[in-house]
Structures are given as C-alpha cells and as structure tokens.
Amino acid sequence: MSDPREIERRVEALLFAAASPLSHDDLAVRLPGDADVPAALAALAQRYAGRGVELGCVGGRWRFATAPDLGYLMSEERVEPRRLSRAAMETLAIVAYHQPVTRAEIEAVRGVGLSRGTLDLLLEVGWVRMRGRRRTPGRPVTFGTTDAFLEHFGLGALSDLPGAAEMKAAGLLSLDLPPGFTVPTPGGDGEAEDPLEDGDAPEFVQEFVGSEPEAE
Image (tube, rainbow, N blue to C red; front, top):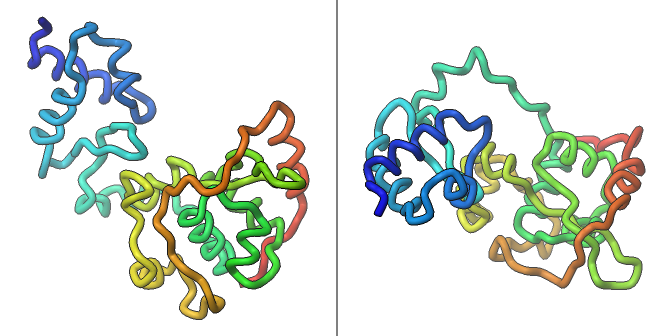
C-alpha cells in the first residue's frame, strides 16, 4: 500500500507545478492506483490552513492560492476585469441562479429585452458559456456559468451562491429589480437540454459580433 505521506508529497508537487486547478481524476492518473487522493488533499488543506498560501477547491478542482487576507499584496500585479453594466450584472445573476437558461427566459425574468451585446460581453469576460440547446421548439441555446465565474467570486460551487439580499449588497442584483424576480436554488437541473453540436458555437457567437451592450 502506498505511503500516505509520500502521496501527500506528490499531490503537493503536482498542485504547485500545475498551470491550472486539478481535479481528483487529474491527480489520480499521476499517482499509484491505491493512492488515497481525498485524504492527501484533506491533509494538505489542514497543513496550509492559515498560511500565506492556502489550498482551496473551486468548481471541483484544487489549487494553491494566496490567502484571501493577503490579496492586497498583489494589487499592483492584478489585472482588473472590464467593468460590467448594471444590465450585464443582472443578466449574470439570472444565469447563475436559473441555469441552464435561454435568452428568452432571461428577458422574461428581467422584464425587458436583452441586447445581444450584453451576453456577448459576459461570454467575452469568460463568466458565462453556452451549455447546449433546449429540447423545445426552435431549439434555443442555453447559458450557464463557468469555473472562471466561481473563481472570481470565491465560490467553491454553485451551492455557495449567496441569497438575494447578499447579492444586492454585493452589487450583483439591482435594487430595483422587476416584479416577480426570485432567487431559486442554484445548480438545479432545469429543463432538458442537448449538448451543442459541432458548428453551433461559432455560428451563434457570430451573431453577437458588432452588437452593442445595453446602456447602464
């Protein structure tokens, strides 16, 4: 049986060398077959807790990162993301809580039409992705959030999303949302959808090129 301490050392080395966060499966393929990856990750998380670099999990993937309270030390090296309009932030919140969701459903929740440029901006920032096509007439494209969205807002999973009051306080929801707006349990299955087929994404993205985002 593999030595737990040696497995822990190897997992530590893999995570430090990785260019992006690693899942259990990513780690397991590089370790002996009997390696207890969850135990090694738990031991590392405990060992690094409270240190300048901590081990965290985002979207089911593990990574070492600067402790949250020391983030200010990196402020001069951080690239600030493009500021989003109120319409874009409201759209992002709706996608996060209602995914998989179509453009028509986003408009129904907001109570106003949605500029194609607004979704285009969220796709460009990398916080929203096209998930598939709804199994309804017209086969509309569905949208969902990405791991980059979880990482930016410090969420381990969609189930960690805050409630409506906290979303408003954080500026993710407008204080004057349209009547009937609700915050459902995030991460629900929603209506049935099919994966995008080859050629779907490029064609759909092309519709957004040159469109203008909504005004704030």
